Amino acid sequence: MAENQTVYDVIIAGAGMAGLSLLWQIRQSGLNHLQILVLDPDEKKVNDRTWSFWETEPGPFEHLVYRSWKEVRVTSAEGTVLDIPLGDYRYKTIRGIDLYRFMDRQIAEDPQTWRLTTTVLGVESRQNEVSVQTEDGAYRGKILFDSTYRLPLTDPQATHLLQHFLGYVIRTPRPAFHPERPDLMNFQVPETGDCRFMYILPFSETEALVEYTLFTEKLLEESAYADVLKDWIATHLGLTDFEILEREFGVIPMSDEPVNEFPFPHVIRIGTAGGYTNPSTGYTFRSTQKRIAQIVDQFSKTGQWRPTGPVRQARFDFYASVLLGVLAQRRTKASRVFWTLYTRNPIDRIFRFLDGESQIQEEARIMSSAPWFPFTASGWNVMVNTIKRHMPFL
Ligand SMILES: Cc1cc2nc3c(=O)[nH]c(=O)nc-3n(C[C@H](O)[C@H](O)[C@H](O)COP(=O)(O)OP(=O)(O)OC[C@H]3O[C@@H](n4cnc5c(N)ncnc54)[C@H](O)[C@@H]3O)c2cc1C
Image (cartoon, rainbow, N blue to C red; front, side, top):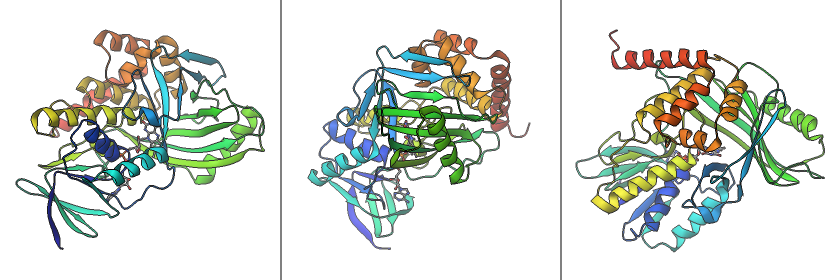
């Protein structure tokens, strides 16, 4: 296969959320001289997803924030409502299409960035560079950031769930939503023993993303999501005559399988491929912005891309594994787990905890507020599995 002789400073495989965030943060930090090649077969012309996240400060894509809320709602399986003011936090949403279009314009105006519509087929790591094989020939780079790697998710000592959801952006003929607060988790869905809830992002009184979300091992038939969604909208919003403006289907791996962020010399995996997804929630957007800021900062200061610390401190991996285990092994009702978490802790403590930014005392409080037996049993299980992974001869 013909190899292009240019040696790019950076090759980015995958122009999705992580790849485009990296490109944007590199340029925002003033590293304008770097020659960057971006590879993705998908031209990203549709709104294939919506990223929501919480933060206290403006983020790198603040200008693209579509909606921002100061309050969220959680509803128990019995219908008890908890409205939670977010204090310094804001819950924000960015539409995929807005980020893709914005970055398209940036790339078009940037003489040092090239984007090719092609599929990456393989990578060869050499002494001082990588060679990236694509459908259109091979490209050389000093470093490859790879967001295309698919996690294997086969480790028998790990817990694996899938977060899967079907959402409709609907327009209703009369007011049906509270635009001032999204529903993070509404557990008033048919009870099945696993974790299922409705997630609603209201864009106005008459327009919202209504999403049926599940944390389970297997996907459903497509009609099963749609049936519950339509029933729920009819029962809880009293509507059958709504218009579907957009449809969002997604699957996010929720797994505590160890991820290799630095698999070969000159290759760094980013995004979901780099282990940035929180195994117990599926949230990835903000952790990606944070990790990429560390990567770019490291390069600006040292000329090396590889950051020193891990994506999350080990103890946060442990907590996430425990929560994931409670959900996967159905040790108690998921609705009870989350309801307890939200009613017994201030929201800023929960957000810091999920972001891996809390103090040990706060973590102890969260743990002591959780249903005792299921969490202790799951914690024990995680420890046994960790020992087995490191000492397979036992
Ligand atoms: C529908 C949906 C909604 C989500 N909502 C949220 C949310 O609200 N909040 C949150 O924090 N997280 C959310 N996530 C999780 C996560 O933030 C997203 O999946 C996010 O897009 C992950 O970024 P990424 O760059 O790792 O992967 P992607 O954004 O999927 O980017 C990977 C890119 O690689 C390209 N690619 C794949 N194979 C190849 C190849 N061989 N060669 C070249 N390119 C290739 C793909 O075309 C794609 O563009 C959501 C996920 C989905 C699927």
